[in-house]
Length: 191
Image (cartoon, rainbow, N blue to C red; front, side):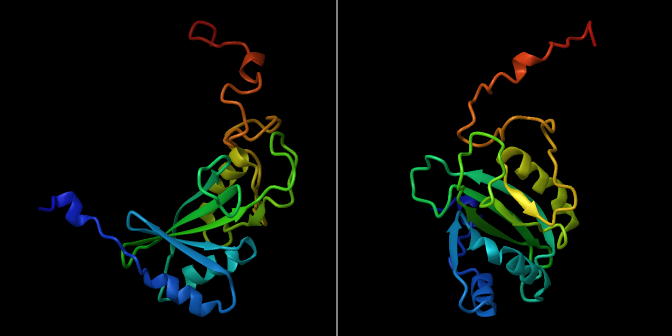
């Protein structure tokens, strides 16, 4: 006996966008995953911008709405991943009410405990495709230290400019490195 929640949940094991992208980019390396009915295309960092452009502009895809840009740190993840960091894009085709994820993996080449710029943690910005990508890309930069080439205003958005690390990296201490202890407590009576 199926419940309403179980019957409304669909599993799409052969999303048509996978075949369309594969045909449009012969010879390129792609991987695809599906989890709980959500499809994700995994692309190489150098192919990311071209694939995002295609997904937005091709009428068969028509992913005209960028819902989110997010970062993930896979440090100590139980499964082997193609890179430590991932940048993901949540795309939506409003005509079909279809959601599609695009993800690329990056591997750091230097120690990630500080704020030094790592040349391996750079991808092309999607701001020229979707202007709404500006702030979520800044958030990924601020929290994970992943830089976006050709971003119009890449600077920190959630922490101050001199913040000594990227706090959502898993090698950043949960209690911080003393940043909170350097500031006076402001309460209602002194504000």
